[in-house]
Length: 395
Image 1 (spheres, rainbow, N blue to C red):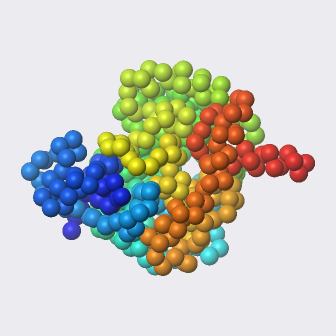
Image 2: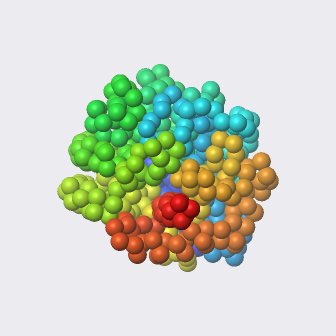
Image 3: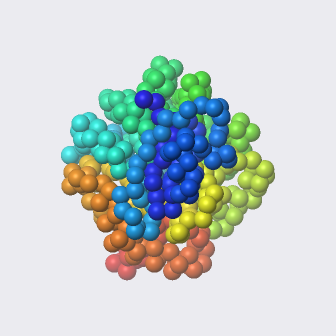
């Protein structure tokens, strides 16, 4: 069966993901009842043919009293640490396969269990996910289970044949890395890779796969990212400007983290694009959640701009479970390992009850009050501040 709607039941009603366009919305209990009993979507959530019958993937609520989302919206699965590039700013030092990497069978079983627990999107990342020999089978399995599939890729391995194959197995979205103009991008990621990435975008678009560009912004490429963002905005291609955090190979790039004044400068230079068009977003650039629509009042607070532990989990190639990839790259201890998890709903409910994010969350206000620090809800950015402070104390 080809699903077009994924609904996870919630205490307040449900989290609904349109599998055709990737838009996530929250619905109340009455709307959920109407959808399940009469196949009647709320009027504002009907995107195409009104008379079309919906094929709905539905996950019922496991715990009736938990005041949070009943499960994560998205799982970022790092299928391998292997990569065909050696980018200078790589946060997790990708390049070679790590010890104890999950087998293909383990990843298949993980996808099935996450689907049963209510995951709505899986983003296959790395490393470079396209170097994994079974990536197409993974995408196909997730798609068939009613999950919105995306990949995070450097784009250099995508030709016409690969793009067609990705479309055939059900890939909905490609998040492609591009860090500025040709000269600057190739300086960061290797000579000739800008042109390869631009071609990959063309091939993916030809197949109707949604595109989002990720640009890591540093002091050394700040002007180039601004130029790129303006160019992509005119082309109506989504660009997300990502913060740079000094981890992995990025530790060698000193004085490249943007200050509050730097971000003010970027916003000033992109003011027209940010006000007039919807295509430029980013960490501290435009603080919005591009994938969800808070159309109803929720009975709990959502941490804006940071999904870690509340709406997202990250699984590294050895099966470790983390709140987010940035924390994992900074050697923040994993929550657990997938090889220890039999019941993912129980794991999630225990995680929320124990509030393992409490220490990091309490540090947000402390660090947001420091001079020249960009205000943030990013738990990993706060952890970086902690690491810097601890290192100074050791010295």
